[in-house]
Length: 196
Image (cartoon, rainbow, N blue to C red; front, side):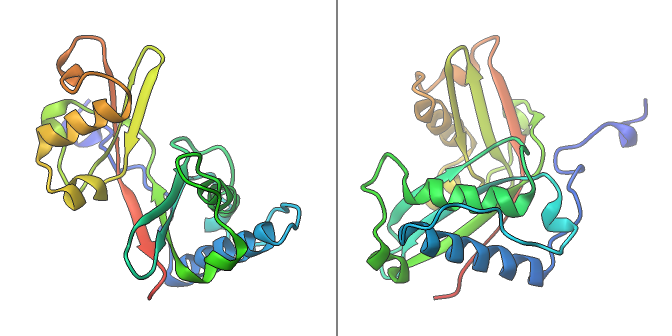
């Protein structure tokens, strides 16, 4: 097999999201959150876009508009459902992130929604990790952790800091990524947010 025919990280990106698709996902996330916080039962959003009906993995992050402070972030690393449904489900999961008090209906207007759509996971070696490009998932026995591509940049981390931080997120010693038998996966993410 030639080098050009080897699968590359990010080469399996499905159909690109248009600006209209991105707007629809943000609007869907906000509407689903508004409905959920006012007691409505979840229902799968209507959608006519073939791109948004493809199975994709996503993360939804909620931040306070004024400070940028994290208010909740939840996602899935594997494509289990149509993208529009993934975003809707992860929006609710972010609002009920167990690390924070549940989001209240009166807070929603004060929060900014960010969406990250992930490419499929692919095995990656530590020396192949590019800060700012790759997100990472590590798995060792019952421990696993995931960090999105923007995290190391926001923390001012280099590659080794990123790998150390990933291990700590998974509840492992910081240098666990150097051990034999770890499962390290990389992905890329198409990320955008509501305007302030």
